[in-house]
Image (cartoon, rainbow, N blue to C red; front, side):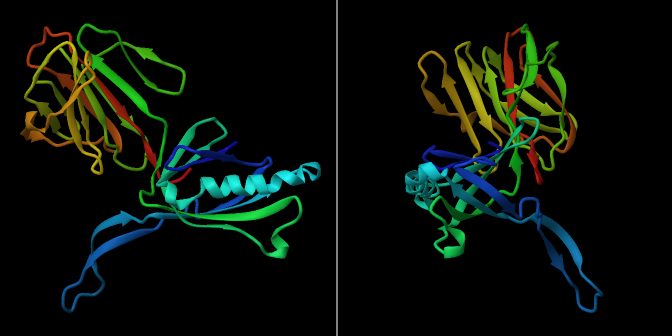
Length: 289
């Protein structure tokens, strides 16, 4: 099935070309709309463009619930199933698309409307048309999570988590290329022992520095997503976590993202003899799939 929807409770529905849930169209799929901040002075011809932003995505999924003639009794069961899955009271969901290369992309969405058509032209004893309208506040499709690992005294690797692993020599400096359509936030995990761990984007000059000595059973976790900024320390032995915002060096912390194109990322600590390491997780973002 090339499409999946997962609601806020984790319940999911797959639909594609085969019964019982057949997808007909996904409208506005790659319809990108932008808005521009504009200023105009007295007597000026035209306007000055200050900035631009991509508007939320409004998707309309149309399809058909279909059963074989000898399974007519199952039609209502499938109608109840899809109605339950697309219940807007079950929270924000995810729409997933699997392309011909078996690569998965997903986008967050909320349900604007859901309809099981009751018009005579849209139903038979074995079928019923449906329509779902989805509002995607963030218009970018997220690819599979990729992990980059760096550190001292360790073997290292960089690979998409759901694709065959590709190993390479570990370095404390790597170039990560963002082939997506937007800057990408990072989930960073510093593993001790480490004294004042630091991650720097040499391409942009941005840096994240932490004034904390991590023991061998501690991991510092930093999320640079603007919608979910977070800094915490987890004890790997006890599983407990603590807020760690007070350890962030505010004079040298940009909570940076991977910019489009090449990003030279460098990892260091205050003691080059430490067996520290860092894991960087990110998901490329695309406007079209």
